[in-house]
Image (cartoon, rainbow, N blue to C red; front, side, top):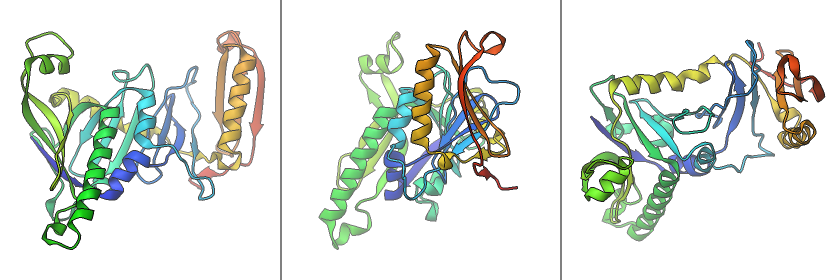
Length: 305
C-alpha cells in the first residue's frame, strides 16, 4: 500500500479557501461542492418519495467567502479520506457527524501534480486507500506546509535549490510513537504504541508536518466508503438559486423558523423552475398544517434540457 503526491499551490488554496455550490439531490440529501470538483450532502427531515433537487452557484459578482475545510469541520470533527489513482474524496457519514452525509470529490490533477508519475496510489484492493482523519488538523497541516513552501521558494531564489523549493510532498507513512500516544490515537484502551500511520507533509529545506490518521481501512470498509461517495450521482436536475438570492433565502428560512416555533420546514422544487419553501407545526406530515410559505418562480433549471 503506497501513496505519494506533490501538492501544488492551487490545490492547497482550494482545500483551505475554496468556494462552493450547493444542491438538494435525490434521496433526502443536500449536496454541496466546489463548482468544478467537490460535492457534499446533508439529509433533510420529512423528505418524501420524490425529494426536491436544488443547486446554488456563486456568480462572479457574489463570490463565496466560505473556506472548504472549515465548512467541512462544521458538519463533523473528523472525515474519511478515500484516495484513488484519479480522484480524491473526503466523506463524512453518520460515523463523523450527527446526521449529515457529506461528500467532496476532487480530480487528482486539481490538487496534485500528476505529470511524471508524481502522484501515485497503489494497494491490493483496486488501488484504493482509505483512512480517517481530523479535519481541523488537516487544515492546520496544509496551512503550515504552504507557509513553509512559500518561505523555501523565497529563500532559494534562483539558486540551485530552486527546482525543489516550494514543493509540498505528501505521503502515507508510519513512524514509532510512545505507548500513551498510540493508545490515545486508538481511542483509548490497549497498550498502544508501536508504529502509527501518518500523512507526512514535507517541504525541502523545512521540517515536515505529520498528520495522524487511522489505520488504513480493510477491503470491506473501503467498499462501503466507495459506495457512500457515489450518492451525488442521484441528483438529475438542479434549480439555480442565484436568481432569488441565497442571502434572502437564508433570511426567509430564519423567519419561518421563528414562526414555526420548533415545527418542521419543507423545501420543494419543480423542473419548471419553481421553488417552494414553507413551515408547519406539529411535526409535519398529515398532522402538521402549513403555517406560512413562499413560492419563487422562473428560476433557471440545469441542465437546460
